[in-house]
Image (tube, rainbow, N blue to C red; front, side):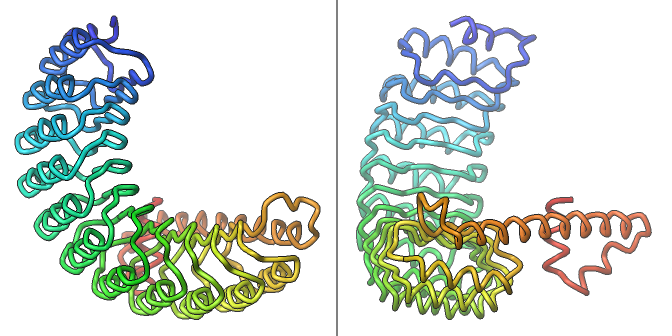
Length: 389
């Protein structure tokens, strides 16, 4: 309570306030809202597991119509339901400070999602929206998809475990063909299946901004993996693909492996909890002998035996870019696992040294006013190093 009262003090320097896992009364929410109306320093507010409900959210929302400092609001596990979602939607139509809104685990249904979607057609500042573990279903997903065709600021959208099904995922796939700002999309545990994955794959052939796509636990089989593999032969921007806990076997893995011999963008591939055997492992290992960009590959809880692991040991004698490879759990005495870990360590150190050298070169070029020359020589290296620099 003392921290909440401090927000009303003009001399306060609090920038981040985490009140998670502590029961809070409506009277304290009112005090917090009063502080937010005056405060100009707090940028990050977390109220996880407070059970403030729709009424508490409405009180906070009125304050956020006035507040111009808060950029991150986390209301996870608060049972705000559609009532709270509507209140926050009204805020987004006015507020120009919020950039991150986390509303996971809040029993929000399609009406709440539709309200938020309408607000985002107007809002120009929110960049990250987390709606995972709600019940927005296909109607909520459809509304958000329509918004993605208009909104030009949202970069991250999480809709995992929302029962969006075939129709919802299909509408989002269509939106990706038009959207030019979304970078991260999480659709895990939504019963999508192979047919919709084909639509998502078609979108990836056109989309040039998405870098991370999470499709874990969606009953995706070999057909879906093959569709994604074909798309990644064309797509040049996706760097992370998560296909954990699906039904992908050796045929789908073969298609993905063939793509890895061509694709130069993918950095992280997650295939844990699938149906990949030693045959699939051989395909991936052969691809690693050619691929020069993938740095993280996850394969735990498949059907890969000692023989399959051996193929990766051989591949890493050639591959110099992979730094993380997870094949099996609890095999600390396996000689192949030990050899793999040793080579991965060497690759990691060499990659770190190369990055340091690249940064030093950029610094020197900047001193000589010649830094722009590297753009024409190798734009990819230039952009990656400038981000670190």
